Image (cartoon, rainbow, N blue to C red; front, side):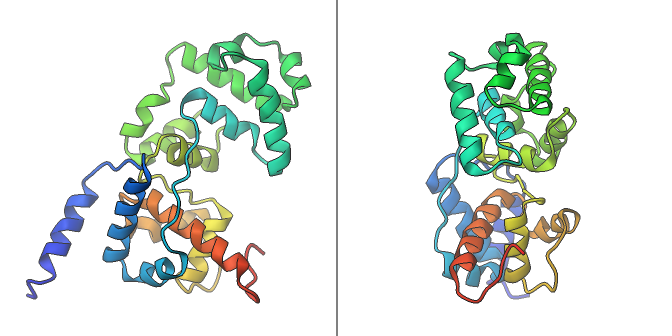
Length: 233
């Protein structure tokens, strides 16, 4: 056996047993360096992108509500609606939304489906059947399943909340089209992988799949700028 390989293998084995949080840029940089060292397929990706920047959002009910409000909307529309909603309630918390009149929320720009989702979530939190804060210390898949078990929270919303709001280092946005397209090109796949296919592809990056997602998003942005490369089609 080549003993020069053993320390790296032991190090990666220890990492895979850890629960990693991406709370600072330094956390992300450490995670990305670990991934690139472990998986040589990521090295050319990293050489092209450089170190990605950590993306963060507000945690708790406000952070989750922000994501829900922006679902299936343009960035400009989502920003405008969130601006009106967050300004209308001080403080903005689950109790405020739970008690708010449905017609008032509608006038602020929310659809009936999103109002229903926010009110149901507010009630679940108020009745202590959902604790958003503890999810950061759970296994990423278990936390994902907890969120998606609630009405109106799909896989993408759950993963974005875990990754950006809670800094969960292993959250994996398998349904994100940009990440799918980046993985397709970066790994030399013939077709864009589906969300189901993305799960086994990301297994080598546990428990740092969230850091891998940051790297793939950065790669996608580079690809979009490269002339002659059609992405997202």
